[in-house]
Length: 371
Image 1: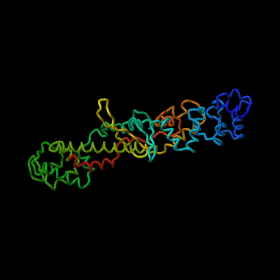
Image 2: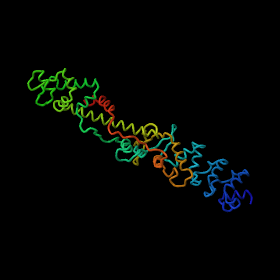
Image 3: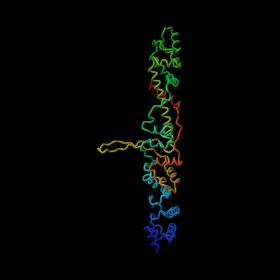
Image 4: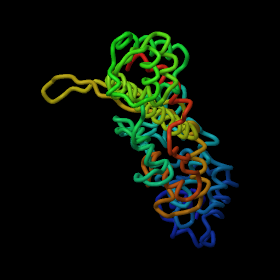
């Protein structure tokens, strides 16, 4: 049998017919053909899967253009090695193949790789914990939803108006005094409605019987007297009292939402860059009308590293979940990697209460919106 006959039989899929000549060893056959400088004549796709070993793969890498072989034609236990090889030697081809065929939710742009989200909440599964209770995933699910946190937290059951006064800066204290004087300054207020010593002392000082007046010089003492101020806000300044309580509630809840928002997006920065962007897309309905839809994207921080980590850890495995196409999406792949301790889930401590400095800042910034 001539060398031409050997090559023809091999390329026709008749390895069994010639295998005994080479002691049933494909690598021996390939090396023989290589010594004759005829390896380029071999159809590599006809290498029997049962004989396509690591040694055969290494030989082909050293002596052929392995890219001529299709990902789908090589044995499963070598698929991940195949991709790792191309990531090192044919990077652009490998990334295009992976994103178009194996992980369909990843897009290539000029400045990097982007994850195409079905919706923002898809990212919640990358956080630690469950979707219920006070875990990082629970908070992430709400922050990533269209409604944000979606409810009020009511950290304090009841906020007294003077609680707000304690947090006001000097400029807002001055404005508060002006508002009070404009509402009830120099008006007769009945002592029957008040129990505070502050008002009784004003009446005695002013020599009035059963009533008192708030003068400009009295306002400094009023805003410092917690009991008197709260009592006034229950009676003649009840609207002001309600506004002050609403101000504190909004400032506190906004502070909490801002804090956990930063925790969620700060956590995502471990694997992603920047915020989620909404890209408009025009859709033509069946009736011919046009409507704008928005696709959500977020830039992946190190897509190549994630893929290589997975491929290295499952190199040589033939289980179905050892391959990128089993998952089909980057988020599902990352969840599997988290479950296998290949990467870590995103975690943070969920605060029990809003940050006091944020709350105080919000109170002063929102003061004129409420009072």
